[in-house]
Length: 372
Image 1: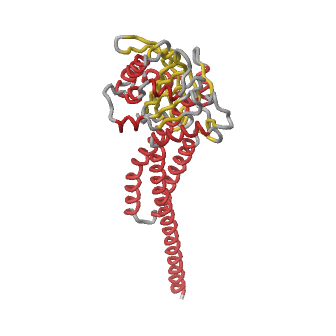
Image 2: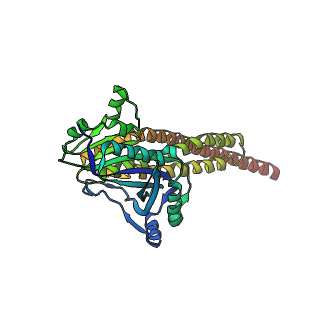
Image 3: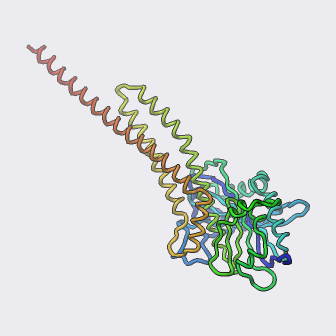
């Protein structure tokens, strides 16, 4: 079969950053609107009814402008956009439009873009775009705390092929998606190929979505961007859950040290020390719980079964439930420690009160004897 030609499509490279504990999106929108030629708007899913599936708190979409990229010996121009999420994540996207390109050349361009801006390519141009973004909306960042955590994702999107329309089955027969999904030029084993093509979805006969850990292919003749938006949200949730997982990893040894130090310093101030440490742990649990709930509710699914299946599969593929469960286990340990400290503080106060009462009784007895 002759090589198919991509009549209309694009390649989307995403990089997500953890930049703050939270972002005031209304303030960020105002700040960006005051920026020269700045354009910003709250995002929504374009092809899905709001009551069927919607953002918990719609992220703020921002147009950053064109970016020139060097792909090997050629220079191309991509459109750069960004999204800010209320729970502290920033997503920057580079969109490279494609038309009139043969399938093999399309796959080659996607892999060339990955080599130029992917995880192995270094910081450029991402750091410049992020610095420009945070330079404008920095005042809207609540407790800026760049953790250095990042997530990358690459999406190949085709709206139309040259010639008559084709079904998803026709497409799977006509092209080999494995080089696009894997980035590998060598032939893969049958098992590896099956793994790459396992997460495959279609709603109509003429659409197709195939997901992997770090790449996806979308064939969508209607031009909806909802699947790409859902994949971005899932990556943002993974990024933030990883942040809180690492935060709690660092906090647990520190907590054990503080508890041990408090127990070694038994004295009349023991109850106050226990209570102070318990309050600190309670504050940490409350803060992390509130923010992880915002992350969990970033996308609310009610009626759109197709997008819900893709969203759930992406979360499983990215291991978001596993990381979330690890965060919950560590929060449970801290809650149990808080409860134990609170009980010890109450016990210490009770012992101190008993000692004070006994002391007062002894003083009364001594005074009575002295009067005699």
